[in-house]
Amino acid sequence: MVTSIVEVVVRPRFAPIFLVLVAGGCSETGPGPVTATDAVVAEDVLATDPGPADSGPPEKGPADPGPEGAQSCGDPIPRLYSVPRGPGWPSPNAYSWDGSWSPTASDFPIAGLYDNEYFDGHLVQGQPSPILPPGNWDWNDADNDLAWWKGFASSVGAFELLRDHCDRPFGWRLVPHDPTGVDYETLAAQFEGSSGTDILNLGPQGKAHSTAGQLGDGPDLFVFQSAWSLDFRTGSTLTGALRDNDLVVAGCSPVSGKDYLIQGATVHTGPGADRVFARDIRGAAVDLGNGEGGRTDSLDPSDGDDVVVLRGNVKDTRVFGGWGDDVVFWFIDEMQDTYPGQAQGGNLFGGGGAGEALWGDPGTDRLVLVVPTDTVVVGQPATPPGALLVMTAGDDFQWDLPTVDDPYARYCYPCGVGPGGRRTLIINYVARDGQDKTAGYVFLTAFEEVQVGLGPGAKVYRIDEVAGKAVWEPDLVPLQPPGFPEDLCAVP
Ligand SMILES: [Ca+2]
Ligand SMILES: [Ca+2]
Ligand SMILES: [Ca+2]
Ligand SMILES: [Ca+2]
Image (cartoon, rainbow, N blue to C red; front, side):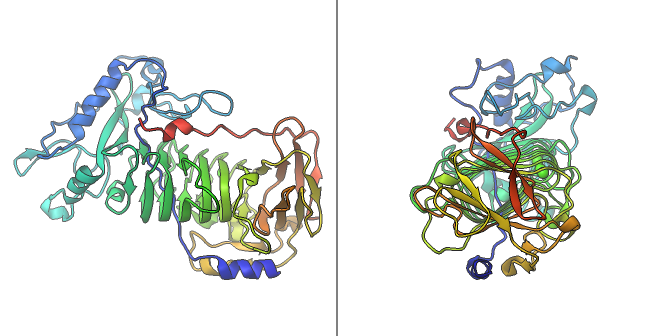
């Protein structure tokens, strides 16, 4: 179809990645006073900041389990996770933004928290070495020069060792020199993420670009305003799949007009039940659970039920849900980059984007379009104002040519005929004012449900992938999107 051909021609080649930095984590609105644990944390910040002379003392022993009582040890740490309290948001504990990780006494000390060379404060050139998270901290490993770390400490910031209420380390938080906006690029990416909780908040103007990065196992947070030429993994089966519910904010505040914040970037959140907020995103990909480090032809069996919330301008964007029951909330009426005749719509996959991963996910995935509840569904073009077109994309199979040689990016549209005659569908949404908010056709593969609108009056349709149509199912319950975690984007 013409739309598909044009899309191939105009799509930029990229292997984008999303990076998430967690800024501060200390919200003005955070509950409760600073506790003794906070003081310990602050001390650790000082202890792990090498300062101008790399003279920080070694940290306290990590193996002390402290008093028994897992519940009190794991109580939430005030202001560490500034996520909303209320509907759609699970409650944090000490270790995780969603309470998903509750290590027991026997889990401590947690393996993989420290760099394999700079973990004990040993003397280097007569000075105690810093205690660091996993990373590439020497320029020349044999020289123990700490050159990458010195650069990081002078231009990016320090790391704070996170401890629970029983003084047991479980992760790290970036403490940037400039909490309003970290420039995360090659230097910052020498940090390789720990097996525990890593909070990488780049701040409300933070930018992540021109590099690859990772946060590894653990329920990590990654927050930034803009990204380009980025390939980032907050979790990956390449490094493990432990306790890996990650939270990403890609785009803190809206850009004006037809502009974009996220371009040529890919964020892989990998295993676990992840949550990604992305706005003003173009030529980019959100991989919520492809396997083998994000290969689009692989599903990760340790992947969970993921949520992505798309806002603002969205064009030429891929979402891969992977394994599980995944939900894409799309505030599609916010799209401003519309003009007649364009054909750069996106590609949404309930599973992966190639091979057996296309149809191999047994989950029930839903696309939620945040549009007026009286939007009508039509089955053939042209899409009239105030309507959503849902129709089959036919039997054809076509690779996206710019990405076909990259196993971490390749995808098809349409994707031929799957098991039982399942096929890709096409959707197109035209708002009441006549603007084509999907920017042409969007290809939907292995999604089982589409919801039109929020709240009372919202309708949930089952997608008949064989017949290529949407069937209203009054018994299916509409979903509400989680509120935007705006406090994560505040200056601490
Ligand atoms: Ca981690
Ligand atoms: Ca992770
Ligand atoms: Ca996931
Ligand atoms: Ca998933």
